[in-house]
Amino acid sequence: MIDDTFATYTLSSPELSVTLTNYGARLLRFEYEGMNCLYGPEDAAGVASDTCYCGSICGRVANRIAGGSFDLDGVTYQLAVNNGPNHLHGGQEGFDRKLWMVESADEHRVVMRLLSPAGEENYPGSVEVRLSYTLEGRRLTLEMEAVTDAPTLLNLTNHAYWNLNGSGTIDAHLLQVRASAYTPMVANIPTGLICPVDGTLYDLRQPALLGERNAAETIAGGYDDNYVLPTTPGVKLAAVLTNGRKTLRVLTDAPGLQVYTGDYLPLPRGGVALEAQNYPDSPHWPHFPTIELRPGQVYRRTIAWEID
Image (cartoon, rainbow, N blue to C red):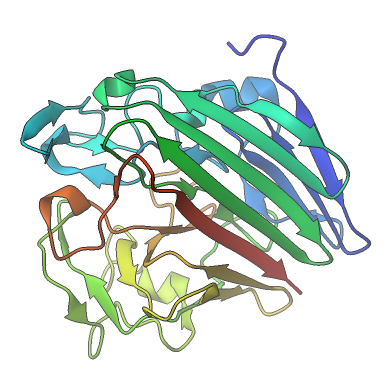
């Protein structure tokens, strides 16, 4: 159970109300026009029992590392294998299970910090992460920075599940992803290829109805795939999700977007995760964008969600 240091904070604008907690730096509510557009628990008891990373910050390394091992500067590190034979979202107790220190909070912005000591989950080096959630109008922006005292790996994301209906499934939602390539997977691990989406069911450059794409004869088991975003610098539009009445836009400077349609949630397809991050299993594929972080470098990641 979570102890009494669990706290919630609410950001407000005339158009939008966002509730978050210091436990996992999680988003709990994203309330627009009187409806919560997030799938997942909203209180301490629900968050404590959550196993789906709902609304949380995932780290040190979001997504999967095959076999739970990686080599860095000639040293092999073995991490926990907590997703079949693989390491997922930071291990047994990733950043989603940490109580973050709240540095400041008001109705427009919350700033949090987390220190991950050297050796935590067997990662080398200590890492200090500082993040902020800022609400302006109908846009919520997450900015993350991190530094280390020794070479390590870092790949952070927010793992919110979106459902613009507020309940039920996302089958009637349309999803568009601004990516012309993806990284094919076998058993949720990239093959190392970067392939065009042309002529495949992974082509989401035009809005696609998720219920149709998730049908048994098409994407059986739903999407859980990494899309290769444009390499143009800065924050850019990555995805657009709509239910015909509301539209959510995801913007980021990340090189990849993991699309997971939530087929294995307690309510299958109760929400869709649009996780802006680096590619899965990056340590094993040198041609993927690196997730190495070294002393003197500053890790930076921006993710923004805009609704209308």
